[in-house]
Length: 325
Image (cartoon, rainbow, N blue to C red):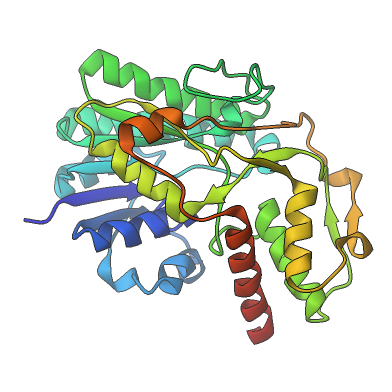
């Protein structure tokens, strides 16, 4: 019998790539989907990868414990990946209670449902480098203290420590991946990398003249989602659960990332980018740089796709999208 995986957040960037990866490993893949009148829009990523007909999509909601108990009892998964969240940092200041309920308590709902009906399954929690926030060390590892700087990051800290608590209290195989920024052509348009690559494509094709951004001197450690979902799976293949930082180990500014994107289409970014104070965050995270030595040593994980390769892939995908629109 093939192994079964159950994913929340299956229609997001990581959910789509992880589903594709697991299908390639021979898994039966089940995904939680929230009922919506925009269902055709929500599963665009799964259709883009050509895998939607290979998945089992089940109606439910991360905030509804009863639906999670029912689904997990029916599916009896071997592995559970909690990827769902209100994940846009800017929106978390506008909707802090929703962010806390979905991103924070939603993790506890999944773990509690698993504890009640499928305690032998293995669990993965999508933790975030945003938890480090106002960094306490120049390079962040599993032992670096958290200092969250947004309601989103606070909710992620809650979910992270909930995962640790369930692991230690109930001896569950529950692991967290503290993932640093990871992107792809499937990244949502509201996130800065995709906003930049889409903007460069539109300006190149004459569909726009300017790109408005906030603080472009913040520094981030970026990798490709395909590399990072592979790390998720590797964590759940270990005999013992644990927490792992997943990062490229290289940080560049948003300004440098913009330059890569605009140079790929032969444009001078300085002629097109406008700094808009309205896009600045109330409390900024100025620099993040991950140390994934533990993941490399224990999982044998290494990133395979460089930042430059990823940005070129994203710009090319956006050029094709804009040209065909």
